[in-house]
Length: 314
Image (cartoon, rainbow, N blue to C red; front, side):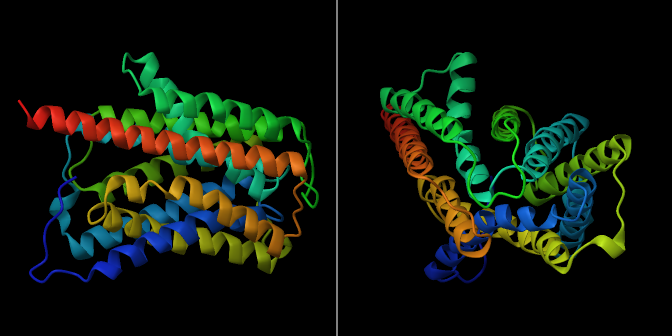
């Protein structure tokens, strides 16, 4: 990703503040989704969310970067559309459906396995992760097993045995989209890339909601659902912009810590604001998963450093 330097250097604290926004907002969207699906149909609400967010990002690109920022080749557009299908539609869409039956904190802990999925996919495509990374994946599988066998979380609005498995399937979609986005040609402007993906994913989710027979009865939508949906639309876009800003000014390994900070925030907010209660097995499984993600992130960072050093010595 190319970063254009501003004439005056921004203060260092601004990058850390941006990372803090990513920590809090991406960690809190699980709870916002949990409130929104209480009285809103899952697929239609998620589709509308991404259509509005994508339109807002397009407006931001037009205002701050001009029409030229929308230029892309057909292969680049194809990648953005594919990522939109895999991330907003498959990944987020299944999480939204599952959160009618899964506690928001548990959903966040299960989604935290995305880095583990990514390592497995990279291994299947011929790459060789470091021993620390592979150890992290093995430990993460143990943690996921404990989470899945720990039973439903107290305070969950509805329960279904397939709910946690649906979240794991959603995480697989995010992982595939992450790997595809790193290997295929992408639009030059990262915000345009995200906007196209959101619009495609939002359109697909809306279509799925219509086919599924979902209907929005405005009189039945609660204030809490409106607030949760609006939070995802407005602050979700802010978090993405903050993520891009932090990624351009902080080490990648530092920014990647959101992968194990977000679930912690999601669990705390679920306990404090939604009366979700985790048992000893669920806490233990969550801690094991987070420890595994830490190992994977550190292992990948060290492997990258070794590659960089070896290339510099040539």
